[in-house]
Image (cartoon, rainbow, N blue to C red):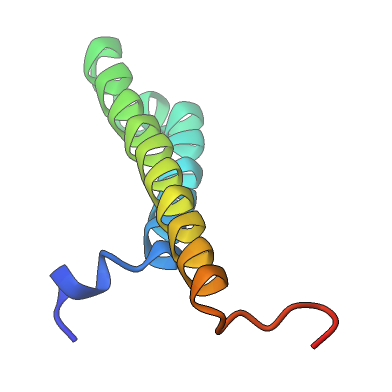
Length: 82
């Protein structure tokens, strides 16, 4: 399975979004203090990580909902009473 095929899976996108959120939060706390980089560059990196986080989780959630609806409509979804 190639990376392009794997990135279309909702769980992978949600996982990337969550890791970006963790890295963004940690970099908010430590990036400027440890590396001594300018505040503008640190804000840009943090904004990029937060943007990746939001985008990954939104697109992953949408794909997850679409795949669940498709399974439900095709009748392959096992409900709680099955």
